Image 1 (cartoon, rainbow, N blue to C red):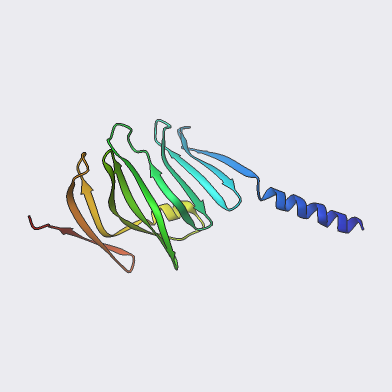
Image 2: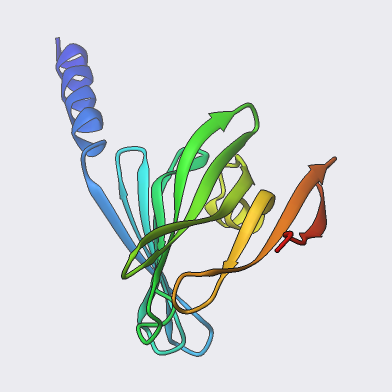
Length: 164
C-alpha cells in the first residue's frame, strides 16, 4: 500500500512540474545580458539583448522549431519594424516569411528556411534565404530584388533587374 501511495504522489508531482516555469538568464563573458529563457511545458520563450542590454529579438521555440513570429527590434530610430512569421513545417525544415512594417503598412521582404534541431542556437544559425527577397528604402519603396535558390544546402543568389 505504501508503494502505491508513493507512485501516486510521484505521478502527481511529475505532472504538476510540467506546468512550472523555468527562467534562466545567460550572460556574455563581460557580464552583460545575452538572452533570457523562460520554459513552460514544451515551449521556450527567448529574448535576446544587444550590448546595451536592450531587447533585440523575441521568439518562441517549441521542441525543434520556432513558432509564431520572430520579432526584431533592431533600432528604435528606424521607421520600420521587422519580423519573420513562421509559416510551415516540412520534413527536416521549417519556413518563415519576413515582413518589414512601415507606417504605411507591411511589406513582404522574403522567405527563409531553417533546419529543425533540438538546440535553438543551431536552428538560429541554420537560416537560409530562398525565393525573391525585396530591398526597401526608408519610405517602404522597393529599390532592389534578389532571388535565392538552395541546392544541397548551398545558397545561390541572382540579382533581379526589373524592366523600367
